[in-house]
Length: 184
Ligand code: GLN
Image: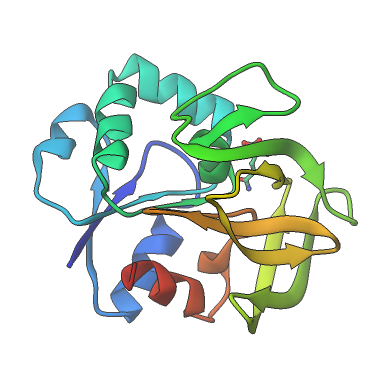
Protein backbone atom coordinates (compact mmCIF):
# COMPACT_ATOMS: atom_id res chain seq x y z
CA UNK A 1 0.00 0.00 0.00
CA UNK A 2 1.41 3.37 -1.03
CA UNK A 3 0.07 6.66 0.28
CA UNK A 4 0.73 9.94 -1.50
CA UNK A 5 1.05 12.77 1.02
CA UNK A 6 0.42 16.25 -0.33
CA UNK A 7 3.56 18.14 0.71
CA UNK A 8 3.11 21.68 -0.55
CA UNK A 9 2.81 23.19 2.91
CA UNK A 10 1.91 22.29 6.48
CA UNK A 11 2.19 19.20 8.68
CA UNK A 12 2.94 16.46 6.14
CA UNK A 13 6.07 14.91 7.70
CA UNK A 14 4.12 13.85 10.79
CA UNK A 15 1.71 11.90 8.57
CA UNK A 16 4.65 10.16 6.86
CA UNK A 17 6.04 9.11 10.25
CA UNK A 18 2.66 7.77 11.31
CA UNK A 19 2.32 5.79 8.08
CA UNK A 20 5.82 4.36 8.52
CA UNK A 21 4.88 3.20 12.01
CA UNK A 22 1.93 1.36 10.48
CA UNK A 23 4.08 -0.21 7.76
CA UNK A 24 2.59 1.75 4.85
CA UNK A 25 4.85 3.24 2.18
CA UNK A 26 4.46 6.92 1.44
CA UNK A 27 5.91 9.57 -0.83
CA UNK A 28 5.54 13.34 -1.06
CA UNK A 29 3.41 14.98 -3.72
CA UNK A 30 5.06 18.31 -4.48
CA UNK A 31 4.26 18.90 -8.14
CA UNK A 32 1.86 17.81 -10.84
CA UNK A 33 4.21 15.12 -12.22
CA UNK A 34 4.23 13.39 -8.82
CA UNK A 35 0.59 12.50 -9.46
CA UNK A 36 1.75 10.21 -12.30
CA UNK A 37 3.22 7.81 -9.76
CA UNK A 38 1.15 4.84 -8.77
CA UNK A 39 -0.44 5.17 -5.33
CA UNK A 40 -3.51 3.90 -3.50
CA UNK A 41 -4.40 6.62 -1.03
CA UNK A 42 -3.99 10.35 -0.54
CA UNK A 43 -3.47 12.50 2.56
CA UNK A 44 -4.11 16.24 2.56
CA UNK A 45 -2.42 17.59 5.69
CA UNK A 46 -3.13 20.47 8.01
CA UNK A 47 -1.62 23.85 7.33
CA UNK A 48 -3.32 26.88 5.87
CA UNK A 49 -6.14 26.09 3.48
CA UNK A 50 -5.92 29.41 1.60
CA UNK A 51 -2.19 28.89 0.92
CA UNK A 52 -2.60 25.25 -0.01
CA UNK A 53 -5.55 26.06 -2.28
CA UNK A 54 -3.55 28.80 -4.01
CA UNK A 55 -0.57 26.48 -4.54
CA UNK A 56 -2.80 23.70 -5.89
CA UNK A 57 -4.18 26.12 -8.47
CA UNK A 58 -0.81 27.66 -9.37
CA UNK A 59 0.77 24.23 -9.80
CA UNK A 60 -2.23 23.08 -11.88
CA UNK A 61 -2.95 20.18 -9.52
CA UNK A 62 -6.44 21.02 -8.28
CA UNK A 63 -8.41 19.35 -11.10
CA UNK A 64 -6.22 16.24 -11.14
CA UNK A 65 -6.57 15.71 -7.41
CA UNK A 66 -10.31 16.35 -7.53
CA UNK A 67 -10.60 13.69 -10.25
CA UNK A 68 -8.59 11.14 -8.24
CA UNK A 69 -11.03 11.65 -5.38
CA UNK A 70 -14.22 11.58 -7.46
CA UNK A 71 -12.87 8.43 -9.16
CA UNK A 72 -12.83 6.84 -5.70
CA UNK A 73 -9.31 7.06 -4.26
CA UNK A 74 -9.47 7.05 -0.45
CA UNK A 75 -8.46 10.48 0.84
CA UNK A 76 -7.86 11.77 4.36
CA UNK A 77 -7.95 15.51 5.01
CA UNK A 78 -6.77 16.87 8.36
CA UNK A 79 -7.78 20.33 9.50
CA UNK A 80 -6.90 22.53 6.49
CA UNK A 81 -7.33 19.32 4.46
CA UNK A 82 -10.91 19.09 5.76
CA UNK A 83 -11.51 22.66 4.59
CA UNK A 84 -10.12 21.81 1.13
CA UNK A 85 -12.48 18.83 0.85
CA UNK A 86 -15.59 20.72 1.98
CA UNK A 87 -18.14 21.61 -0.69
CA UNK A 88 -18.81 24.85 1.21
CA UNK A 89 -17.06 27.03 3.76
CA UNK A 90 -19.46 28.88 6.01
CA UNK A 91 -17.27 31.92 6.59
CA UNK A 92 -15.24 32.03 3.38
CA UNK A 93 -16.49 32.30 -0.23
CA UNK A 94 -13.73 29.96 -1.49
CA UNK A 95 -14.35 26.38 -2.56
CA UNK A 96 -11.25 24.29 -3.17
CA UNK A 97 -11.62 20.57 -3.97
CA UNK A 98 -15.25 20.68 -2.86
CA UNK A 99 -15.80 16.91 -3.12
CA UNK A 100 -17.28 16.19 0.32
CA UNK A 101 -20.89 16.98 1.25
CA UNK A 102 -19.97 18.98 4.33
CA UNK A 103 -19.87 22.64 5.25
CA UNK A 104 -16.78 23.73 7.20
CA UNK A 105 -16.49 26.67 9.53
CA UNK A 106 -12.91 27.98 9.55
CA UNK A 107 -10.91 29.08 12.57
CA UNK A 108 -14.01 28.73 14.64
CA UNK A 109 -13.45 25.89 16.99
CA UNK A 110 -11.50 25.98 20.19
CA UNK A 111 -11.54 26.96 23.79
CA UNK A 112 -7.98 28.20 24.22
CA UNK A 113 -7.32 30.82 21.59
CA UNK A 114 -7.75 28.24 18.92
CA UNK A 115 -5.34 25.51 20.00
CA UNK A 116 -5.96 22.84 22.60
CA UNK A 117 -5.64 19.18 23.43
CA UNK A 118 -8.45 16.92 24.53
CA UNK A 119 -9.53 13.30 24.50
CA UNK A 120 -12.75 12.23 22.90
CA UNK A 121 -14.30 9.51 20.83
CA UNK A 122 -13.43 8.73 17.25
CA UNK A 123 -15.66 6.02 15.81
CA UNK A 124 -16.53 4.96 19.36
CA UNK A 125 -12.97 4.80 20.74
CA UNK A 126 -11.48 7.48 22.98
CA UNK A 127 -8.33 8.95 21.46
CA UNK A 128 -6.12 12.02 21.99
CA UNK A 129 -7.04 15.02 19.82
CA UNK A 130 -4.93 18.07 19.12
CA UNK A 131 -6.74 21.06 17.64
CA UNK A 132 -4.80 23.96 16.07
CA UNK A 133 -6.86 26.89 14.81
CA UNK A 134 -9.24 24.17 13.79
CA UNK A 135 -12.38 24.21 11.71
CA UNK A 136 -15.45 22.21 12.60
CA UNK A 137 -18.10 20.71 10.37
CA UNK A 138 -21.13 22.97 10.58
CA UNK A 139 -23.36 20.92 8.25
CA UNK A 140 -23.21 17.42 6.88
CA UNK A 141 -25.41 15.71 4.30
CA UNK A 142 -27.23 12.47 5.17
CA UNK A 143 -24.59 10.58 3.19
CA UNK A 144 -21.95 11.64 5.72
CA UNK A 145 -21.13 9.39 8.67
CA UNK A 146 -20.26 11.36 11.80
CA UNK A 147 -17.24 9.83 13.55
CA UNK A 148 -16.47 12.42 16.26
CA UNK A 149 -18.42 15.10 18.07
CA UNK A 150 -16.42 17.25 20.46
CA UNK A 151 -18.09 19.92 22.60
CA UNK A 152 -21.18 19.60 20.46
CA UNK A 153 -19.33 20.17 17.17
CA UNK A 154 -18.69 17.58 14.46
CA UNK A 155 -14.94 17.10 14.30
CA UNK A 156 -14.53 13.92 12.23
CA UNK A 157 -16.63 12.45 9.46
CA UNK A 158 -16.56 10.10 6.53
CA UNK A 159 -18.39 10.14 3.22
CA UNK A 160 -17.70 7.23 0.85
CA UNK A 161 -13.94 7.33 0.15
CA UNK A 162 -13.38 10.60 2.04
CA UNK A 163 -12.30 10.95 5.67
CA UNK A 164 -11.89 14.34 7.34
CA UNK A 165 -10.81 15.34 10.84
CA UNK A 166 -10.72 18.82 12.34
CA UNK A 167 -8.00 17.64 14.73
CA UNK A 168 -4.48 16.40 14.01
CA UNK A 169 -4.14 12.67 14.80
CA UNK A 170 -0.63 12.70 13.28
CA UNK A 171 0.57 14.85 16.19
CA UNK A 172 -0.21 12.22 18.83
CA UNK A 173 1.07 8.69 19.22
CA UNK A 174 -2.34 6.99 18.91
CA UNK A 175 -2.63 5.36 15.48
CA UNK A 176 -6.40 4.69 15.40
CA UNK A 177 -7.38 7.29 12.82
CA UNK A 178 -4.62 6.36 10.39
CA UNK A 179 -5.48 2.69 10.84
CA UNK A 180 -9.11 3.51 10.08
CA UNK A 181 -7.98 5.35 6.94
CA UNK A 182 -5.72 2.52 5.76
CA UNK A 183 -8.66 0.13 6.15
CA UNK A 184 -11.07 2.25 4.09
N1 GLN B 1 -6.77 27.62 10.26
C1 GLN B 1 -6.33 26.83 9.15
C2 GLN B 1 -7.14 27.09 7.90
O1 GLN B 1 -8.10 27.77 7.93
C3 GLN B 1 -6.35 25.37 9.48
C4 GLN B 1 -5.41 25.09 10.62
C5 GLN B 1 -4.75 23.75 10.57
O2 GLN B 1 -4.71 23.06 9.54
N2 GLN B 1 -4.15 23.38 11.68
O3 GLN B 1 -6.79 26.59 6.86
